[in-house]
Length: 142
Image (cartoon, rainbow, N blue to C red; front, side, top):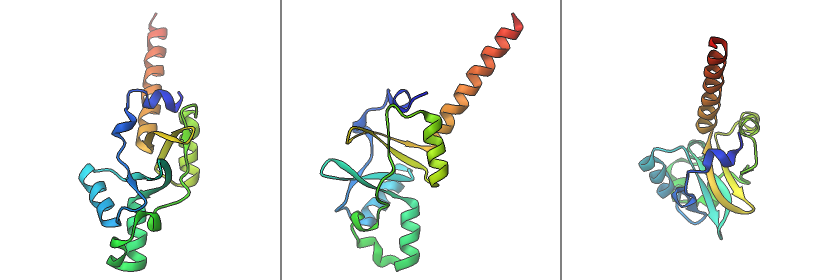
């Protein structure tokens, strides 16, 4: 399955994101209030990086609470590793495993059209395996 199929029923306007100028403490509050692990960080309508729970932990360990007033542009992970709609889900999962990341912005050219997590991809794969298993059981039963 391609990433485009995975995100086809999601509106890009529903993606929770922030800008490079947003203070870190506001982004942390955004993560907490939406119960999410990461957000794309935007600059002039393009993905400039990703801000995740890991960024919070690393910065707090290095700098203490003083980092909370810094803008995301200074604390985010950059450059963002991205995929496009035509990327196969298995390929995206392998990329995430290899790069040790849990979130990927999905781009249409340079425009953000989706944001997926490793959980989205694992769920998709499990659904595929269950569908295949059901088809195999039906085939054997007939």
